[in-house]
Amino acid sequence: MFRSLIFVMLAHTSFAQLLVEGVVRDKETGLAVPFASVGVPGTTKGTSTNAEGQFSLSLNHATKIKVSCVGYESVEVNADQKTLSILLKPISTELEEVIVLEKKINATRVARQALGSVARNCNRNTFVQTFFYRHYCKDDSVYGRLIEASVDLWRTQGYRAFRATVGEKDPIRINQLRRSLDRTALAQGHEPISVQQVLQADVAAFQAEAPTQHVSFFREVSDLYADFDRYIFSFAGATSYDGHPVYKINYERQKDSVQTKAGYRLDPQISGTLYVEFGTHAIVRATETKTHEGNIAKATAHYNVFQGKYYPYHLSRESRNVTRDGVHITRIDLISTEIHPGRPIAFSPFVATKEALLKIPYDSIFWQNATMLKTTPLEDEIIQDLGGGNSLQQQFQLYQQYERNLTNVGENGAEKFRWFRNYSKHRQILYVVFWSGRVLPYLYELEYAKRLQKKFRGKVQFVLLSLDEDAAQWTQEVNRYNLFAEGIVHFRVGRDLDLMKEFKVREVPSFRLIERNGDKVDFAAKHPGNPQLEEDLAVLIREPHQ
Image (cartoon, rainbow, N blue to C red; front, side, top):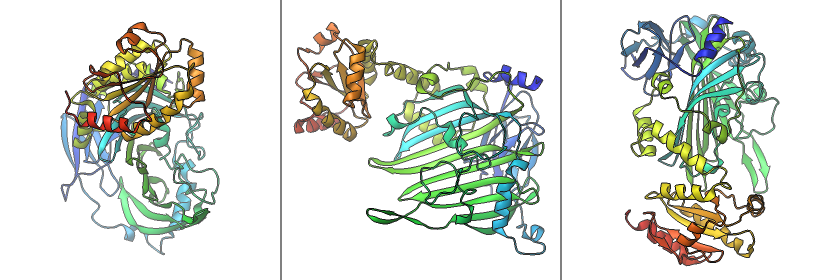
């Protein structure tokens, strides 16, 4: 109970005195060791190395840290310097002679025992685990979104049984958040934060509920347990983790197809690897890759042991999805920073809506001291590209302003539009439509606007300004005619005389073009259905920034 009280007191703020950073390399090759466990022995406090072997760990004082990774001998070093260089010795020989004593390994049986031993190997009691969350997206080669957060997950029943999704039984709480604006093509369809999605990479906690005739590419949880007989398993050798021999078991789902109107189509292909500790049959690492029609999704889970029970210390999801506009790439990492046994004294489940996330205050002291996944040089470029040289804190403050001014746009719409217009200066061209629910026959024209928005996404923003005074009637008309389309921005400005005078609005509909410099306005902009409008927009885009 005392430890739980400490947890509640420190959940939102950290006062670490020492931020230790370093790099972990292979002792023989000098190459980086990615995704190794870095922690304080005898505690659950820790982090993971990044793709380039780097780590950052917040400590209250100088102490020893332990570094472990599958395929290497674990080491303990003194964390008495702010920068450490740690070398791991690879396991020199394959360990088949250790674990293959009498007969050939039965890979299918090892996999079945591993999945059946989860309740014994993992904590079945309630506990809270604190994670660092990082999520970025890009369209083709252009980065469009970066999110970082501190997250608490309350496993109310521990690892008593598999679950199909992260739901009400495992409430989450977002303690801290910082992020950039979302400039990706799929921005409107993105979840505000995707903690549940990456948590489901934990194969020890989440598996499909029932067998499936045909697997879905978009299913987030593994069906390895439910559809076990549809998989082919093979023994791929042996290695070691933290001094214990480990089986390496590859698996692949049997190929199947589904009949469609166009003929038979192959189901998604699924393959992966389980790293299973000899004797306990504990899963210490699991990877799974799913491919289908050019789309790729990969989930990875790394586990560490504390007081005889295994917990995930690094969960990740990567995906590459082919869309009508190109290729959308996502990477999500979830790093365990501490585990708190027992029921928390106070834990308010968090519904991660956009509005709820906007209410989280930015704590600069927390971000200065927090343990997080060390950024790679590539990720530093992402921050630079997204923010135009601004820090992630400055980007987050801009994001908060942006979202607040594009939320509840039926209230104070004129004021919010003025802010949006100023924000758009030197960023994008605005095509503005003044309209009213009292005069509706021209609304078919807005279907052309939706098509143009897709063509000029990121360069031209289509803005609908409603002159309706009745907010309820405006909401009804917007929903009835499906005007809340992706990429279309709305503001109910009512009869704002200053706006109507500035834009010379005498009737509806009226169409205006605000050039990229934010000042010059075309009062004779063509209707969305006029083919010449597309050429006009293309000309403005080609003109140099002013």
